[in-house]
Length: 259
Image 1 (cartoon, rainbow, N blue to C red):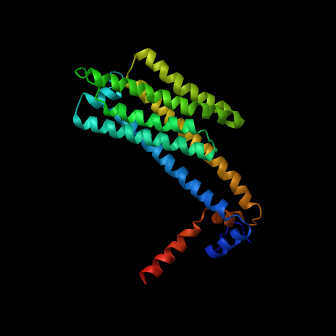
Image 2 (cartoon, one colour):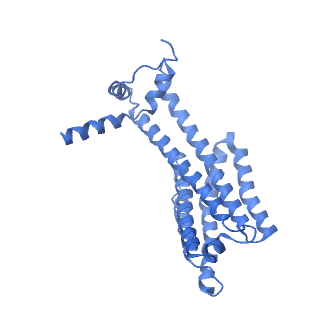
Image 3 (cartoon, rainbow, N blue to C red):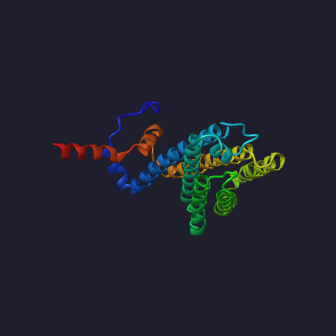
């Protein structure tokens, strides 16, 4: 058979074949994880764009995200809250997805990530204005607690990943240095400005994109090898791996109900 030609796919035949080989669960989990990777990367990319757009609505060398969100207009304030909630959710989803794909079971670190997201949202809700000193303190403290709990939840995990994946160990340390080191450099050079926040959130999100792409791809390759090792035609094998075998069954069930 010509390996460049992909014959018509018979979903029922593929399902029976995978069930016979006891590979059906592997195929389903592989399809689910690929979909999860697409969702997470979409969330992160949109959060990255959102962060840059919001952070540059005013001069980031003069104004922090808090000042942009609280001192110019009510629309900015609403946008600041939406940005914090969306970005926090995207970061949380990505990190928890990485925990799952790497089977990282530390419950305390899972909890720290949830708490960090909560503090980021509370920080955006607390108005940081000169005539509201109490709420300004709440904003500052919760922003600091967000950074603390994010570090406590993520840093041990990423060191664990680096220790168990020598192939990406150097890249992990470089990204950590660029993200945290670069952010602190901006902070000491310019003080608490929007550039510090753009740098930290921007490079941290890019780092999560890199990890999501690399670690998800790695697990997909490992499981694909199991499913493809007996295939004569790799093109057909790849189609079998990533075809949604439940989609046709759901369509048939809907037709039966409607008839």
